[in-house]
Image (cartoon, rainbow, N blue to C red; front, side, top):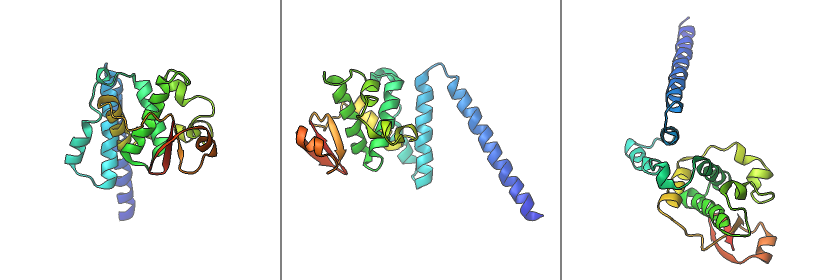
Amino acid sequence: MRKSTRRKLKVYAVDAAMILLAAQVTVVLKADNKAEASTYTTIQAIQDEQAETGSDAETLENDTKYISASEDELNWNNKDSDILLKIAMAEAEGEGTEGKALVMKVVLNRVENKEFPNSVEGVVFQQGQFEPVLDDGRYWNVEPDAECYKALYMVQCENWDDTEGALYFCRTGSSPWMENNTEYLFTMGNHSFYR
């Protein structure tokens, strides 16, 4: 009987936590300012990641600066930011903050280049360009991590750009087409970048 009581208490605790979370999300979603909801969501994502890795409160405080910029500071709408976050996670999950920022900047370099669509959405969803969007569907299933938000902050608010004008990237050694038709620029982690 004692095990049964403990099990019931655990179930009640989980239920209570879910109700509390649902109430918090509802309050945020009703906020007039979409940036407030977005900020809450990203802070929550960082808190969840830090809980899993055992990071301290000081790290959370440092990380929140990356996601507290207002929509005006970012110069892009939430849809563009969401697309950049997801494509960076789908393409460069194991590549660290800089690797994710490089993916974002390649997308933005293409937006500025007349050979590609002139929007973030147009570039990312252009037929045959990004494998996680079209081939394996990974884009649709990823959740951006704290490194993605740091990368977005670097690219949007700090104007970070170490791409050397790169318009393409691929897993190192995986694209004979790029090696034969573009100019190799550099390798970072598991990706080679080309123009």
